[in-house]
Every structure is written in C-alpha cells, then in structure tokens.
Image (cartoon, rainbow, N blue to C red):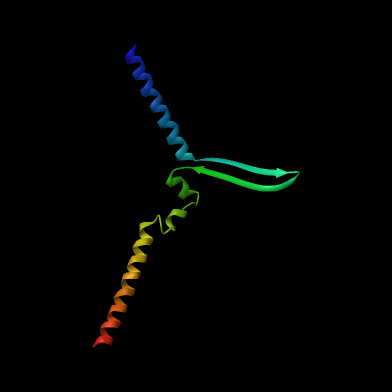
Length: 100
C-alpha cells in the first residue's frame, strides 16, 4: 500500500512538471480589471495584466524589458562602471598635469 502512494506521488509530480513546462512554453495571460464607482462616478480603475512564460517565449513575443533595465542587466552595469572609470582616469590625469 505504501508503494502505491509513493508511485502515485511521483506520477503527480511528473504531471505537474509537464503542465508547468507547457505553460512556460506556450505562455498564459491572466487579465482583470477592478473598478470602483459610486453613483456612476468612476473613482478608481486598476488594470491587471499578468503574463507567465519562459524567457525564450517572452523574447519571441518581443518582450525583453529586463535587457534594458540597469538594475537587472549586468551588461549595462558593466558599461556604466567602465564609463565612470574612464571619466575618473581622465580627471586624475588633468589633476596630475595641474600639479606639475
């Protein structure tokens, strides 16, 4: 009896993994709107859009905002740091020339 439960659990995990793989491969969109009105006067509208997909699928759909976000992209941080380094080196050379 204990072996059957273990096998059933392993099967369920496989099914969950398959479902997750399909969702990430195809993508899923969850959308909803919340509106608060009093006497037909709209006070607040909240639009919620959620996309769940793999990075590859998102890029295929043209969604790649993380590549341009300096807080998320190491490439941009490295470029900014290199630019700052060069600017500091230039300023040091200028100061050294003034001291001579």
